[in-house]
Image: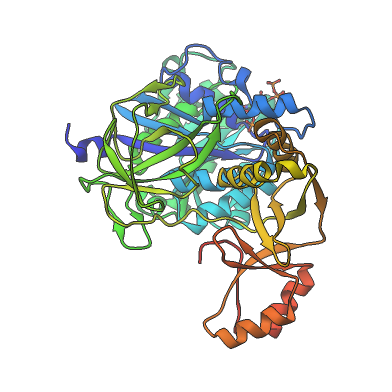
Length: 526
Ligand code: G4P
């Protein structure tokens, strides 16, 4: 098959949700459809626990398992799907944000009863930042939830995106009777836990048909006719263009647990979701059809076995063909590297692969060469954009409890922050190490891993910092003036870029007002 044909039949996406909305359950149902797993429960039993815990075995377990389910590849109707998992726990949100840089589209799961929740909003903000096409699955229609019209309004308002329903629910909770496929004009009747689909699907070109009253009862049939008339009047025919531009989200209703309404989503997904897209580097736009390999590392995971400190780097192929054993250029290091055991994640089994195409994710065994955001090419100096670090929200100073192991601690904290577990800043004088994270859980993970993987004991001392924001300024005099005024609050990140450690929201705002010539950035990419 040609490179173009390989690209055209690939879809790389992520499912995102506020914890508990049903991401794991939906993932499992998609894998069932794709034949990647045979029984329900396979993903579930591996489920990453969502609640903060001090149980370190649990943290270890989570890390191990998330390697296994981080990337799930399966085929559906001749389309090769790569589904990237995102952790549900909010303390790992940054991991999720970075994973979103490696996908071409997203499925957002929303709980019909809870509507838009905090995590939903934040995740959508990240999608909106890069105009990632999004489909929305309103889950748990088998439970009492919010009115679908109300939900649509809430989605549009809070997520700042237009929505267009492609299926429409008939009742909900105990009155839930099924969904009407607005696109195909089909009625899919609800039976809890159904495993077969075809038997209960009726094609109804004409909603006035008495069959509708017979199947749904008069009241529900009447309401459906009204709803559909209203929706068709407002939205008209569906066209994929605004979806592909990230301006409109197709909307589906169903129940992941009961495997209901999922196939409708999947069928539309394989039909309209974008294949691997062009991607910007700092130098130029890279097209997936270019014959030479390019790609970037979006995630690094330490292996479970602490005796071998090797890691897996998750590499997204952006153009060309990745081949086993071939030398590739590691742009940041300026070195040629070759990979003798690249792995794929088909059906959750890690197996060595010989080649990979744009959109696919390859697992590269790494002994410390990779950092998140690293680019591989066939010689060209390119650096992919769009792998930002976000302002952390919790800050602690790392103090060494064992001076004889200083070197190990330094190495450990550098390597772990390369994995994106947390961000490291240096504060002068004394090269103090300030660690910033988006959640408390990361400090526990760090402390545990520093001790068990690097033999370094440490303590984290909380600091009264509100936010770390990157700063830039074209005028060196103004910059100096600001640095002098804020001495003790200016640190550098690992790349040596200056960062303002704002003690409070008010002081950050004040600084923005007092120093208009300084630019303050909430992500490291500007
Ligand atoms: P998450 O990955 O987004 O965190 O959500 P997950 O799929 O784990 O689902 C969270 C809970 O919601 C689970 O129940 C799951 O069974 C339930 N759920 C998912 N989809 C549906 C649905 O369509 N209808 C209903 N009624 N429930 C649904 P749990 O009690 O937390 O877990 P479990 O004991 O079932 O494993």
